[in-house]
Length: 164
Image 1 (cartoon, rainbow, N blue to C red):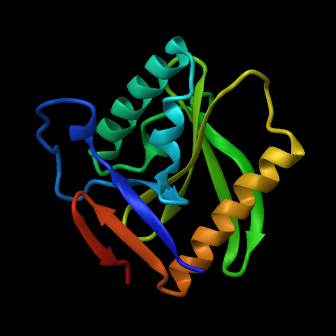
Image 2 (image 1 turned 180 degrees about the horizontal axis):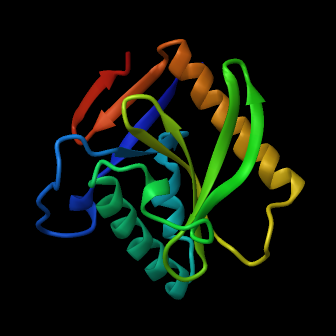
């Protein structure tokens, strides 16, 4: 089964933005049942969490735009593995990024400087529970499987292309 990734770009949040470098990371969200899973979810948050989430994404995109690994830009309090698991080609990590308020952004890396956001949620407790870890791991494995099988379609604005 294939998946669709939709690029999250700064122009969704601000009117004018000049990219810092040509070698920037691109940030994507999953499209599930025809809906953008991350940005679509933000509308269900309360006002405070929604504001924190929007600011978090603006900052994430700005940091991704530097072209540096996020590990080089944040300390381990702000950015650390939320879950680790074994996969075909080795150990994988699902990263948890905390930038603003109670919002945490959970993501994985793909080759070609892709960041794939798996989930965004308010953090109300210190650690993920077993079912939250299993859900994130299942999403990550599906993304990795589709990537290795060339079954990812990328939506960049109005353009669709197959990721090779």
